[in-house]
Image (cartoon, rainbow, N blue to C red; front, side, top):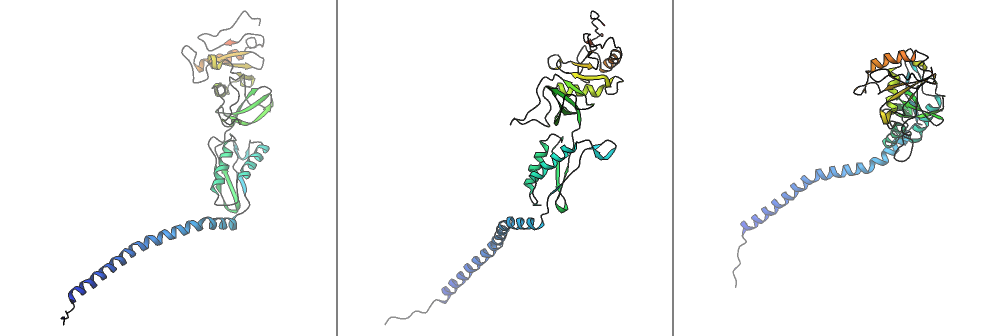
Length: 304
């Protein structure tokens, strides 16, 4: 009869201990994984719920949109503005067309900001901020009218940097604004063919004429300047002052942009005062008087 062997208690104990260690390792690994897993689940559920929650909150909190635009002020009168009332209404309509009542709708704010920037009235895109009770406030650095460029039968408004502004008038209908005639290029346009409001008039002649108008603003004869003719600017770099008599004074380079051999701006200013004050020199039937060269050039062969 075979002999029964006694179980090995040491081996069984070792196996039990190994199993316990394995369970402990699994438990520790599960504990380490649990916290990140919980965080991931919380973030995912929050992201899924955020959109609908935001829309529900926006719908509850939304007030009708009301646009408040801080208009450019008249010098010395912060309560007034030089911007025409119909242009104010147009800018409000542009803003209202793009805005939504949702206080969380940042896309609408960005698109409206771009639409207002394309009007040309702002030197940089304006700032739009939502305020309580549905108010959207618009602030910006406004361009100011400086002159008109006469093209065909229209006077096109431009800012002091030569940028095209979105207003035009029948010839002579812009009041006392300086007039620029015979520009080298047509008014600017955007790549899509739209009018280039806010873009500088191409050719450099329009900004140059505006600088000359500004330079002569303090002259006692400034009110008698009918226009600045820029037709000679691109080919020859010269500006011509047209007086109200029809007489023409060749000024030369724009102020601050003198060329070698040309008289200085101050000397040209002094010559302008003398010539403009002499009716015989600025009569409409005389050739132009050149004041930008070393000496004043007057064509004496012409009848006074």
